[in-house]
Image (cartoon, rainbow, N blue to C red; front, side, top):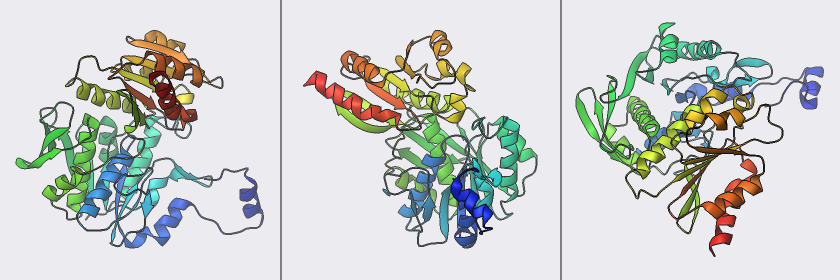
Length: 392
């Protein structure tokens, strides 16, 4: 994680000391002897990896894993494990200051999940084609006895696969939309209950606490990957019915006076949209007065560069109110995003001011969703404290 110009890096280079990257060390010292199940893609890597690790654990396979979040079923983000299986979140970010390939090219997966592929990491990649190049390198590393799992519909993944693929592929889709080998037939529109089909065969029904079509796809991918490792689908479904989620992925941080405060890691327009749409579908089954108040910090490097500014207003359309955070150090203004919104939207630069405003205006049944890939100056606890102050 050290950059060129860091004094430690300079000292190592000056003294000709041997060094390696974290991903390369993992490859050489840990993964070479393991059945690696890697989860790659722009969105859903952490949650899908957590689902997959939990399915293997539930099946008594005691996998190792390295995940960029904390699965609540485990309480830790990494462990060595006691079996050949190792689940890893396969990040496309570059490896190190001396190795500009994506981290995942070091992992040599036998089972590879490609969740999706969109443009992100604008600080590293100039365009989507350059990211597709890295995914092509990853696909080249999957052995002929391996398997690649991907959604049917993705132009970017189509281009990656069409450049060359030497492994079997299994595809995922929602029934009635595309013809995937694995299909989810929604029993509830919010994705909280769905039937799972493989080919023309009903494998079972999953009822769980998650919602949203993105969660359904994550589940299908995890089930398909686990099946490649030998886990029967009915056992995988049973495992996911007890899946507790991942910290910072629609994590309930607290409830005060019937007002719920959630924390979510979404930091890309697609992730923001799918998360809020999933919550909206869930709330549509409940009391009509329930509102979604989204508080969003465009914090990622790509967001700060303004790459996604034109998609931001529409990404939050499922919310009733949206508060966009614009810090003083922002490289671009949020005025155009607010102006383009068709719902109630505003920008703010003071955490304390927006906390006070939301706490005073929130009513019973509101869902406050805080979205950022950082700590957001502790806004979650400040909201809960302010809500407690005004309601006690």
